[in-house]
Image 1 (cartoon, one colour):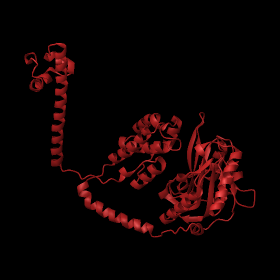
Image 2 (cartoon, one colour; image 1 turned 180 degrees about the vertical axis):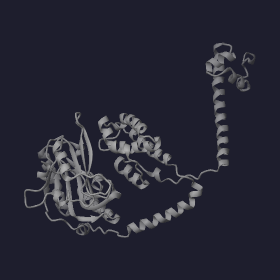
Image 3 (spheres, helix red, strand yellow; image 1 turned 120 degrees about the vertical axis):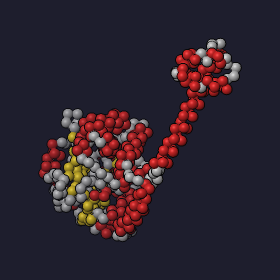
Image 4 (tube, rainbow, N blue to C red; image 1 turned 60 degrees about the horizontal axis):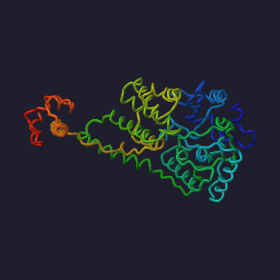
Length: 446
């Protein structure tokens, strides 16, 4: 049973004990994924305390883990105020490194030992601090952890956290069987495989191993990499934001009202275009992120969850490629929840999870024209469109006349209308233009 694996049989505590799993100040998230055709499971668990959000007890979660032994099960090392994202992170408890197998292959136990030896050889050679412990994920990959007492996830602490992780990653060069996966390693909101669960593809247990039973001090870890947190960064950002708000308010009369549907439509197009540009659509690991954000965008555009789900179902067949059960499960909460995001939150989501360039989100809005200017531009556009249409019609009719002449056929109005798929009235309208462009034609027949 999972709870039996929760506490170490030895004097040193388990990784989950060091991370105070089950004794959260706020929320820790766990995720269970099972693609079984008989009873597929895709479920998020919020463990801890929250005034409004529905939470799950450790015992209830453990029971689900035991009932679903063939599931992929993940947990977040860090804690959150509400939902699991960078801005909602409340406490940092560990730096972690995700070491993956090349091509996400399932390796043998012998190959797993080779990776373990190579990783720790590079740790020794580089002189970086020893990790608190590591987790063998069951596929051959590893997760390294540097655990410390909870610290508030102030912006400057998060930035320092990322710098430490980047420093560690730069010292691990990889090998023939493995590589460091940087993106998940620098994501404070990441979920990683849960020790005590099983890897469904290999059937092997996800095992944790403690090297140092005492926690680090976060400040000591920063000093090891000569990283100094800038405690003024949050204030600098706030001042910049206040200046920007002033500028925006000054421009408000000129720019006009923000069109939220147009904004979400741009997000929808960026994700859809990305999916269609990929040979096989979104890869595994991106599909749920693409489906979720596309659905949220479509809800804002359509104004109806049912219509949005109909569209996302078609897009899923085209380039997302989740099963119908997975898609329905992922979007179940989103169908009944109204999500509102800031631009920087959306940008972080698209860049980190879908590798989409988000420059379009921050383009300066064009100055809106006055009603008189719009009417003038519309008039110019209509005249230009009419001219283009006229030239195209004349070209088509003249080509038909020339073709009739080469074949020795009399180009009557009725015949030209049939050949060009235009009305006799249109043929008559351009009679003078045909005379000018083909003077050798007998015009009495037109």
